[in-house]
Image 1 (cartoon, one colour):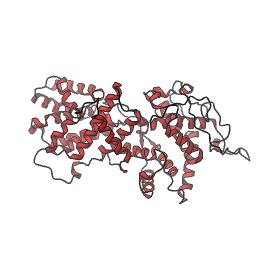
Image 2 (cartoon, one colour):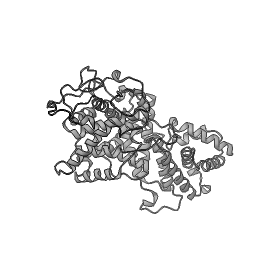
Image 3 (cartoon, helix red, strand yellow):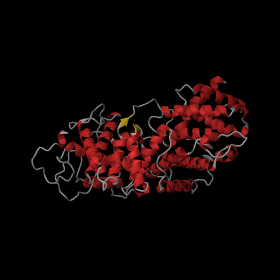
Image 4 (cartoon, helix red, strand yellow):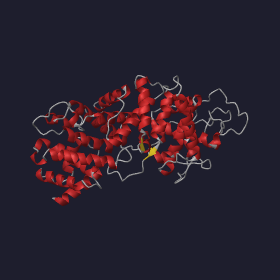
Length: 498
């Protein structure tokens, strides 16, 4: 707390005129990353954001090349405009990191030419006016920088702990004042505390080569286990505000939904918050984009599901699977660099919307209709789609336990269907479920079962080459760059069983 202790009887008066946010240039922070460093004032902000992101800074962080700025490495706050009792250079650098890299990566919407990221501008200005937001951003910037340096966080190091304490103090004051308790800055402060408290250690390797795992900083914030009491507090305040759509702070509602979807993906639960209007519009725009020239009017991805409506596939599930297929096409176009591809901001928002709809699908026992006499494959398809969600749509950074639970449930669901009685109408979807489940079961006890079942069905269908089933897989849900290697390894194991 040394940096917050008043050392003068009369601290310098803060300038009331708020400066304009001007981010650092990428050149000013282009250093090698450090490892195993705990934050302290002696360590400057040295890392290369482009290598950590794996994405072009040009696409992710629009930078305004202006040599004059309020914050930054080696730059002071000469007008004492920041809401700190005693100006601190290291805290200023952490704030600059938050607005220059953390926030633009969190909502990577493309800004107009010569303009800064809109989220950064909004939150920087809001932080200057609101101390609780300022200290929340500095604390978040510290944890974010820690992870980029060493894949871990050190929230109890002197600087981040000091800012966290201020956030807690300001939050207690706000919650005790009815005029402040329901304000946007209060929700933001609780969200920061809820999402950056319990850090999960890195798990086993991902059997899928998932696309864009760092988009929206999912590789960082997907590692946190949310604090239930904080989440309940946010839900209560949002309810008193009349819902997420009534939150006015720029993109805060989307950030809340992102945290909710991340938590439910990690726990296989159900979201607490409904989809936003912007997410519904994003899915409609995605599906329209997928069939708009120069894309073919008839797509391959997810089309095979429509022939299975007599086997328990509901209309709501078909809509979700169709959206997942359109998203897979969007990812393919993006990585191939084709014209008219979606931008990173659109992809980030769309994948959140698609995953939100996926995790909302009810389990088979929650459905109100009575299954027909034919084999009901609803639950098997839902579980396999959840595997694809983790593999391609919303690649959480620690998927081992989630995939373990999914493959166990999928194995049980397939066994209940009595695979031996399946006719040719279901051979394609069974192949798809066994291949996705088998890849997910890599390094898990269920792997041999998926291998043996795959060997059984390919023998029955007289399939001798991996290439012979790729078209079938793509007619359901499949992304070669993410699933291909794991699929071929599974095929080789099944070949040894034949």
